[in-house]
Image (cartoon, rainbow, N blue to C red):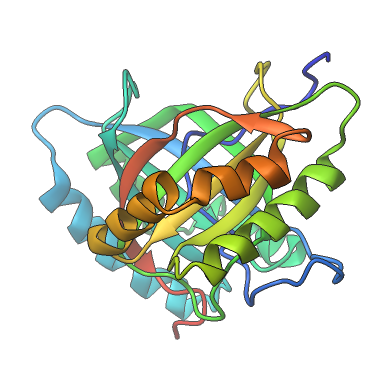
Length: 252
């Protein structure tokens, strides 16, 4: 089928509008915005410098009462990511996005210039809409996030794919998986892509990721997912990032 969707990132992530609560298959899901920026360090700058700016950003966001969560993503299992770190931000709704972006672009913003001295994020800035699959009530903090690029089978729709991922997520949870997951549909900024959506999976630690991998490969997970998703869509091998929390959505 013709690919008309644009994408977030392989990353990205963490994701996430990281939307609250686990969603049952018969409940309508609320989509919320996430954005991703691909960034490279300025000459002579590194993660220690970024962490100092992150602390200033947290204070700025708390002062301005942003309903905003953010993570720094560092590429781990990947091929040619093309950037040093990613910045993933998430809002609970479009109204919160609009207010925070207006404040961010205001002339009296004391933090934007600090970021620009440490990282250059001008090459890639994308937005997607996130819907929860197996998502926690609280904002995820540090961990690991995996981005799968997924393509619809001929004649299938995003609604059908989302419903199938809900069923597959419940099946993996029943097997004991501690994975958190979301469904990302592209919105603006990514240009032309050859897939339809991202399946985003996160873990709090590598031990949880490894246990789910074992369950998936040797515990019947592949067969269970194939039975549910096989006629709806297919997903490529994921890209994996370490996620470092910059700010909790409800932080004050």
